[in-house]
Length: 254
Image (cartoon, rainbow, N blue to C red):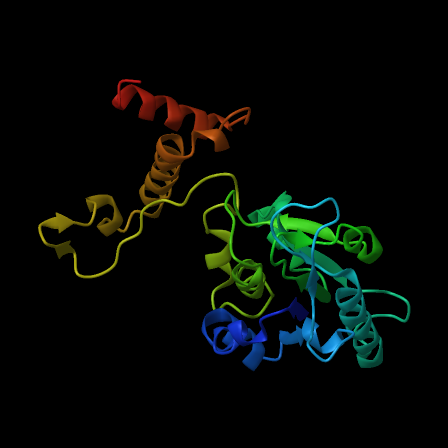
């Protein structure tokens, strides 16, 4: 996968792309990250990338022309590199509080792409015409406002990097993550068996794989029901899950 980042702050990504799963994916040759400075595509010597909004109001708006030129440069490089067929543009995402919420299911879909461009929003926003002109999809990592889209771009990149086949040493670890299905993950423990008087649940020391499987499923349901009940709303559970959830509710008197 090649992951392009269009940004006003390329320095934000120095170091961040050399750590963790992103570093591993790059070292294995499974991921290439290219940071493109939008200011390199401006009209004037000052590198002006923003202007006042039409109709007045507070804040500045990112200008369309530098973004469109930066994306055209990416498209040409993608075609020259042979990763995208001639005339086929990479998938473009725009970080925005108005965007569709980023989920694990969407991450899995995006991880199948060969080329992705993420445009980092800034200021009050991006000239609205950019989105249809690029055929872009707006994406949000949460219901809050950041000073810019760079942290969101890193969240998206990290989520995708670990899903690229061959990146994780144990492919099953990705399958077992929270949100791989609409449940939170069960609690996990490691050695020593006791820490400050808190012990590992006996079932995890039993060696009984079926008991452990059922315990983990029960605790995943319990944690989801307690912390994110919205994930269970309207969901049809299998017989085992429904039985476990009924038992949990009975145990907790709800």
